[in-house]
Length: 197
Image (cartoon, rainbow, N blue to C red):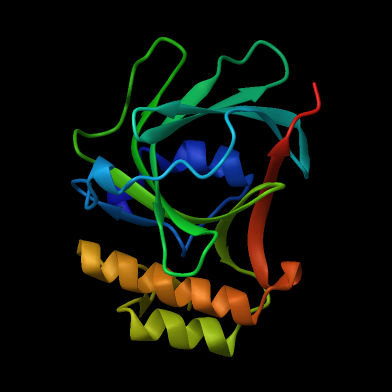
């Protein structure tokens, strides 16, 4: 997971997970133009259903989106920059993360380094997905079909340097699988909903 090593800490904060994130892909340069971005959600403050100590703001930035994450206390916020790329099935998107900056605007990532992860957007908010939870045979078949390989612990390792076509094809097939297995217990996910305050 070399290419996503710098942005992973913020994604781990987002998902409150540790270890491998098999739905997260990475490249050395962005694969999608900002002209492909769509802004599918309302700007404003959001809360995470299972993480009361964290909140976020979602704001438009040109065609793209900035997601700024806040924690209770004095910890400064961090911002994930990028854009939502629509998939064939309505409501499903790839989020292409092109930068990650701290409160002072500093970035620790390598120039060009880009990370991708799937999201579903509806009227009630955004659900971010990091990997399977109770999806075994179906997810194994999906990973194998898209060039993933097994690591020494039996987990899945994402393909190296995927092309834009490979990335899009993987997430299109993943969205179809999610439509067939929509139960919350099938996926590692985090729900972000508009804050009432």
